[in-house]
Length: 492
Image 1 (cartoon, one colour):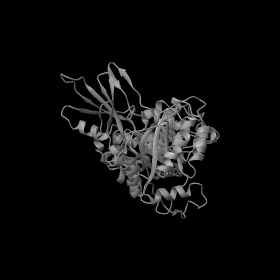
Image 2: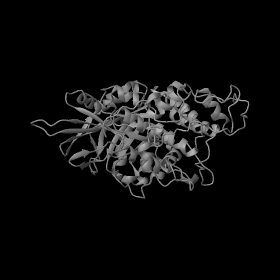
Image 3: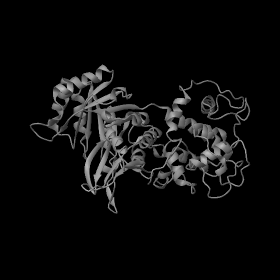
Image 4: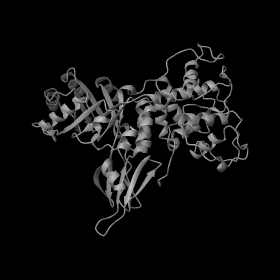
């Protein structure tokens, strides 16, 4: 769990920028690829973006297997890894100065290829299962390979977790319940997989931020929608809404948001929604001039008919919902019904907290739980419909950390304050690969116990953003847009 440098992973998102604008459909440049071929558009995209070349200037090599050497070269182009010293390679079958050596050294440094044997077998075809494993390792999700659901293909035994992940993400498919894992991956199959990856990661998600003031860089954060955290649902019959921001301050903040060309929403949260709150909530949205409502309900139960009524009361204004992940609800939680009622659904994944030998292990939105949530709600098994439409949905990403003093959780801390803590003398920063979450430790003093803070740094945020894109999720919700730092802005 100690802090480790990892080059190339964050460059994956940058690669989408380097690739440039989405290509226009046109005939393939290769004489051996008919325009009617199932992979023609994918082959052309890969050629346009410099991901794959032909075996000659005019021939793509349709139907030919892809060698393991060519595979690592192509992955280097996709992920833009830094060059590495090839002298550290452990393989005995690598010719010094071979055309693929530098790329192989980078792939080895990234953990994409392993040294379980001393042979790399560069000229052998890469199998379909090997390609899936390399791709998942390159994306940085090896840690998830041990928690996947049973693989969808009856013929997959080795690398099953990697194949499951690649299938969950919509990067690979099979036929008739079989994957043919030991078959050589052809060049066109590889192009199709990489084109799917490109299209997913090139997509720009809608971004919404929650604010409480005009502080911070939210106005330049690329947000399309900004929600004003103005109050909570109380459950009271007489006063169903408890406001934490005065009406004047709320109006001023809403005006600031709309002045920047962004859509302004009223954000309210609560355990549940009562019938007596429907009219006050709808009236608050209308009277304050908001474009709609962002409503977070934390209960494991929700009445869809109430939200249907609320949607009607809002008239032509938007209704955006924040709902718990399936691990926090029962089997009857009406995700599908809510998806039909609301304009968008944001899914919230809770953090974890437990003491391990007296040390607080409290990752923020652990990556494994984010994966399980995305799979449960947005993965389509056996050709069936997923629970929610990913294009209309969003993933909540917290920018506040969890503070522990000794064995006690003492509250939340903003990203800017975390950054300041890291610059203090004696404070050490770490990164948990298992949870894809950062944490810091401030040593105990004579007056206070050791302080531990778990938080999402730019690397952790990027891994969640990337995973959401791979599942086709169309939006992101930033919990504390006031506290965004420059590093976090780049990760979003």
